[in-house]
Amino acid sequence: MTDTPPPAALPSPDDVRGMLAGVMDPELHASIVDLGMVEDVRIADDGLVTVKVALTTAGCPLRHQIKTDVQSKVDGLPGVTKVKVEYGEMTAEQKARAMDRARFNARENAEATEVAPTTRVIAVASGKGGVGKSSVTVNLAAALAARGLTVGILDADIWGFSVPRMLGADGRLGGADGKIHPNEVAVPNLAGAPDGPAGRVKVVSMGFLVEDETSALMWRGLILTKAVEQFLKDVRWGDLDYLLIDMPPGTGDIQMGLARMLPQAEMLVVTTPALAAQKVATRVADMARRSYMKVVGVVENMSEFVTPSGERYALFGEGGGEALARDVGAPLVAQIPLEPDVSRGGDAGRPVALSDPESPAGSAFHSLAARVVEDLLPPVEMSGCTARILELAMTNLAASSGSSTPSNR
Image (cartoon, rainbow, N blue to C red; front, top):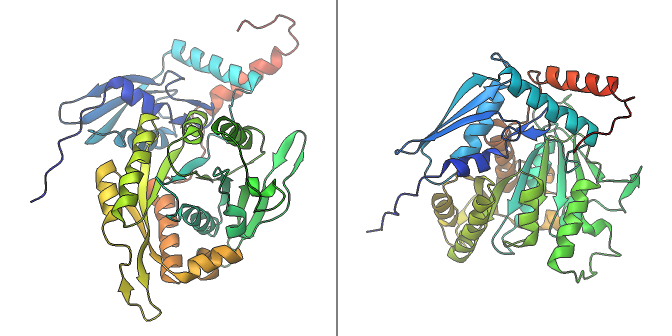
């Protein structure tokens, strides 16, 4: 008989608002909390959380996007059983404050990074090394790009960079106008549309900056965090549908810094079926929650060995992914089989998601990409309920650009 875990404690309204700080308005470039759009948070004893959101206009075309993002973020808090979103309309005073914020952003370029608020950010993390986190990152990026999307990879594993080799990307990073330009890899469209647009993967890694991949980086944690901060602020990422961050293993400075700099980021935790990996990965999920970063799903890598004839063997045990998903309250979104071609493809710079998409592992990565695009984090569709406010703010800014009166800050 197994012990039933005690019910999780209910979150506080401050916990909910902290999580909602990661819901970004894609046109005003700020969170709905900063914009004053979160009017009320109510938490019932049965775990129902009701969030009232004030929209700029009652018929805002972005209301469905906002509802989906609010529900997705709040649902990641322990103790939450259901999330209900109610709508109100901003008063004239609230709209004026939102416009002030838009004007300030337009004038000061208040965006903390070069990553657009419309970019879906997924931090791929693990509790320990050796679970195939980088392999999952590269193959998921390739599978997303094979759907005609533009995907960025930030190799934040500064000490253990491996993304350039796995993706087959090389050469120094270029730049212009004081900004670094990522290296790019073209990806053919494999989504069933022969004439569909090709995808692109943009990559930034320390592997493009050191002399060779055998060079040791003997940097302390604070310097590592600064390096990642530069990758976010000084790299001209351009328009991205997704940015995947290959995180270093563990729960150190880099993880906390990324949670602060990219509030819209959500975490995908990678584990293996082994109990030790699953227990350590729980700590990463706990760190994410403490940083108000939602754990969007769990990937069990190397779940079983598949022979050429289709026989399956659980070489590393069974149930680690399911146990982790149950412990952290997130769905098990993929089980990637153990195949020699995954490792060989990584060594040769040919991700199995592209070189053999019909193989068990290749198919699993494409299924994971479909789950991300269609369910977990669909690409943001831009439409204009707040565009009118931003346009007016920019017009007012242009009209007052000749004023010599300094602004008060």
